[in-house]
Image (cartoon, rainbow, N blue to C red; front, side, top):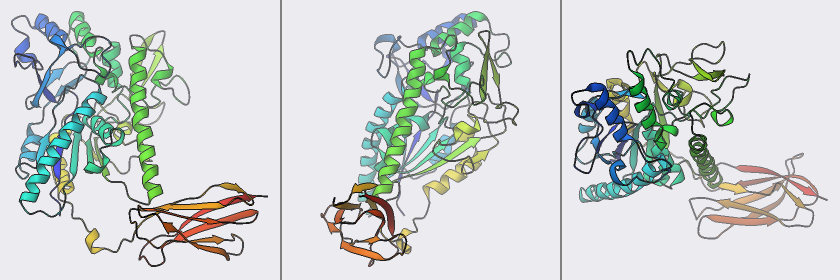
Length: 464
């Protein structure tokens, strides 16, 4: 069993942030001073970023340095009360020395920027861990098990799928990750904050915390990208409905971020299928269920109202921040594969049952050496060719030494009309050509001498 490196990526607000003098800027209790309201206004002004920052890093007073995992509760009213990661840190501390690496980051900045930093961090930490395992005579090459809370899952998935980090990963475990965003982000960015959450909070303080959030690219990248606006029967997305006080450019960026991720997942998955290989890492998702959670919103005379359901359906509950539909990876057909817990958003990563489940991810037994799984391959055949034009058949496999055979088969009689050996190029590629007459044909490719290898089939139309 490989002793894989465990990398924890915290969520929004989950990292300590320090200024150039080493002061803990992301700590309201150290910032407010004597007059609480005035101190809080200054606190949020200190967290604000320069306008138009995009995926870049601020200079001057706006530049803050991540300085470790959050271990004491912190509150950003209207966005999130964070109970910190004290119990999770204790759980991670029980693993082997050196096996856990925590990636703190400036959660205000664009997730693209944070993903680039994560790439550098993983390259460095995985090399360190591999050297330690080799020194301990471990023959297996370690990979990474990513454990991610909340927005940390978006940062990590961007690194894996867009920035080419897939081969480093064994597993991606997300805990309350808003794959499709959260309506709660709309509340704070439009200033439509819940009165029951901000009892007795004055307008000046509300304006200060909203103004600071509006400068943060990462908060905008948490906007819901599903059809959350219920003005029409089928629902509408935020990028199609202008909302008061939402920056259109930032909304467009949130949807562009989601499109980048979705396109990369589709592309990488298709390449895996074509090559006949499994995905390099597995995705496990956990979420909270049972707390009232904003799921949809509607507009009337410029006012925004929120609901915890779609129309007359039962409530789509969540963890109080992330609705169930968003905690589900978008490429999954439904939420049946998600592990649900009756916990709130920041309680999830600190729960003992979640920790027990995480332990099963770290210590999973690789049964493949004891099974006969066969060798996979993928094929590529044109959908249509003209009569008299050679029909190329190509295959790809991780195994460059397969003996692959192609058959041109009549779909009516099942009779093999032609048989060809696919010639290997020594680098996992194989090719052959047929010369079929006009009609519809079936191309079958198999590796008859490889146990457990599937037969791949494609249909082709030969035009007269």
